[in-house]
Length: 390
Ligand code: MG
Image (cartoon, rainbow, N blue to C red; front, side, top):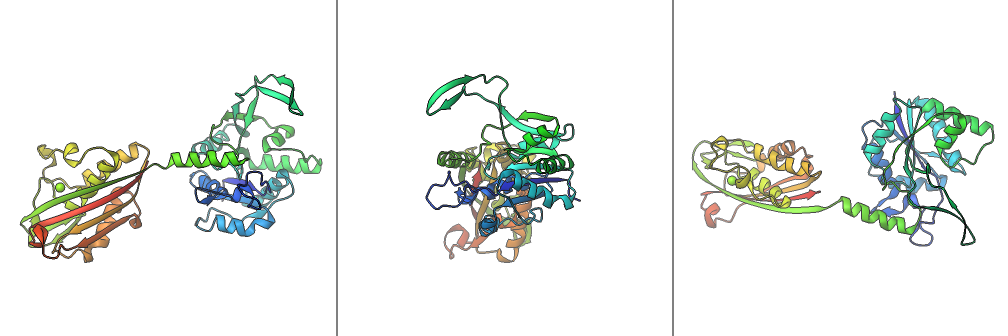
């Protein structure tokens, strides 16, 4: 049974923010290559406490909605419902559609606020454990003026004035009753749900909102949004190269996989040349030196060590900076053993070690056409690239 549901209101026709004439309503205009609404829905799906997401759309936007959500593959995203002529009517339609799901909590969010953090969503959700309604808001910092025909008629006292944001959180049964009563009473001028809750007599508890959780309203907001998203994704690239020579033995360890062979790789640790190259690529992308600095060969504790320890350490440094690895590409250079039969297992091992999906990891192999030390079968060389998002 569904418990916590996000209701995203995206039925507006507002085109003030469109960058070109005849462009789509602002929730479907692209921001970093994806519609605003796509970003909004993703933010809620990324938040664990949210069991389902329902979007209220305009009847004319069915196709635009399909496109905006085409690559979102989540059973938690419910089929959209059509809204009404006002925001209040659209929320009503959404709540009516949710009734059969019997949610405990509902978070109502503007479809044009794509920068709402998972943290704020969680705070609103958790706040409902103690309060009947949660409103994220920020104290107004600008001095407020009443203006008529471009002339100031009054300066308002801004103390105790707060700007309301969304998501606004409610116990479902409360806000649904409030909306039904507003409809019966023919009260139709509410601009947000907290004001309906107040009118209905619920205590609305305010929590600190988030400065960049702004509603996209003008063209300038899109530019501000692009800057914000650009700042969020800082790409870093690194490469790593390693060589280990063969010595007499009966197996080699390559990318965590044991391959029976008539030689072994010589080295202080398990000499896993593939993992060493990847580890160095990550250190390189971070500007954090190389494997020898973090794990000196002179230190006896690394003698014979399994090299996934080194790789895990490099990934930890990425995580500590709040980043993640986007992908890894590794090329192994040797005449023998044959890598092909083991490459899938190697990719899986690397993906597991780094907490990545297998399609983020590539392991390729080549010979050096009989030339050089790898051609003379004296050892194996490995070359890796890593892309980080910080
Ligand atoms: Mg090495």
